[in-house]
Amino acid sequence: MLTEIPEPTVGAQATKSTHWLRETLLVVVIALVAALLLRTFVVQTFYIPSGSMEPTLQIGDRILVNKLSYHLHGIGRGDIVVFRRPADENCGGPPVADLVKRVIGLPGETISLTKGPKGFVLINGKRLDESWLPSSVQGMTFPGPAGQPYNLAKPYVVPANDYFVMGDNRTDSCDSRYWGPIPRSLIVGKVDLRVWPVSAFHIF
Image 1 (tube, rainbow, N blue to C red):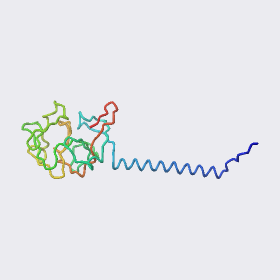
Image 2: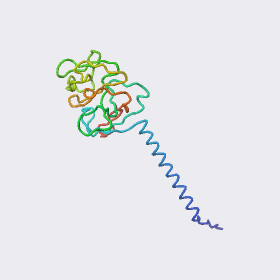
Image 3: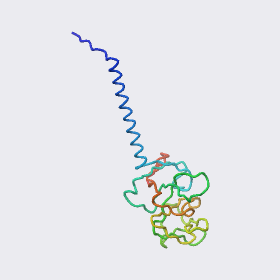
Image 4: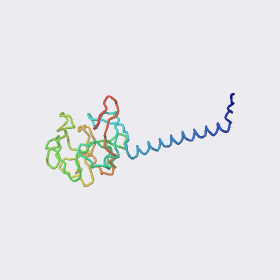
């Protein structure tokens, strides 16, 4: 003997559809909130618009920045960092919100150059090992524009809580030699990965 199964009523179908819609919206909202929290507090991707960090970073590269890194440990010399544009930065071209450079001088250190129109970087009077630079670029650091104490025409003491940053492309980088060291408060995070192009994926 067969028992007939009643067709779902219109009201039941509507309730089921409403329930599915609510669940879908909830999942979407949770995903968006999670993505926003990750971007705000954990990691963020950035696009490289200029050649100031060549050859380490090329125009068009996309990098992944770890925003938690410096909450867990200090900022190290040689770290590549993303930071918000300093107020005194005026290097021509359209202003950008964030910049990327390499940390060279730490708070309280004296940074200078060997004598000559171009030279090697000295930290507290000792030559800095910049093995992250190609040998052809080492010794090619020159002072910034005259008139500022941080242009490295003379030894310069990095203030407390400030960091002296430079681009790896020393002959074509507008950096702390031009607009001074950056305060710790401007640093967004540490560059951990180059994620694009895929063929150039790299862990820093």
